[in-house]
Image: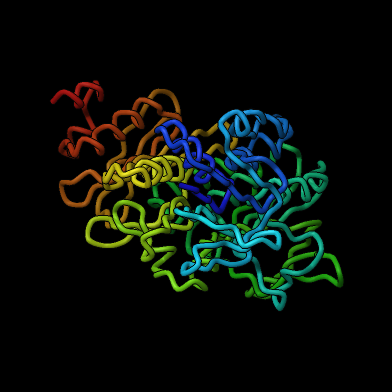
Length: 400
């Protein structure tokens, strides 16, 4: 059986490795549109951008791993078409046949439209190695950068720029940073952290357009103010790469729709990672995280080989900003109550409840709270909110 994997990111690499580790002895072809071997993305907006990590340390596997495991890794080979009837993908002028196909096509950052100045020189997004390489020379002390978007990517880039001595302004159209993904308590904590490091955070502030002739020179705000800028980073979310699947007639529902096993509406085609949505508590969910990319891809690999085990997501995320390590367990959708639990020193954790059910935990420099919260959620346990607030030993709750 020849398995073709479209996408050589975190999900594609995990899927290929798991197929081999699970005993698949047929052909595996992995197609990546970037020239770089499979690499981890989170450090791009952190250690790599800071110059604290070399490119080789980003690689998910040593270069020889792929050949040693008979995985035909083809880099710089974008797939331009998919024919589910003929069971072929178009790549490099070839119609490459498959017996089973896995779509691990990832996602693409949203960009500002050209009418808003998004096509000006000096406007960047943060997603790929090439994106970060293109902007690294801009990070010089004393220069002015505007970050459009107060989500995690934008805030991580803001932290790096501030640490490198730049003048940083974050623009967020919503009433507060992180509004889509976190509680007001978490937003307040992160805002205060950035302001303490000299970052200007402008919330409830809409961008009218970026200005400049050929290169960006500033941002005109909807309230009439104009802010000068030497360059701009746009961090306003990502869009799942569903173009191939959609053109081939596969079902799309907030990503490439799969069943609980990871199979798409075509029985020979599977999907995993940022591009895929899967059944979740009566609805559908698409997760944008390293943990999901790996876990879902490995589950799909097993199911391609006949395991028949539904994917059980265990969401977790993290973000590094200045000296903050923010660790998140669970999904906070539908919360109606936040419990604040102080940790040691400046550490604190925020626990999300819906009624009496624990949904998620945001832990700020509090690894113990994160670890316990993650395990409680995965075990389906919900200690009473007042217990979380006052328990002298969180770990004891795991045995309760």
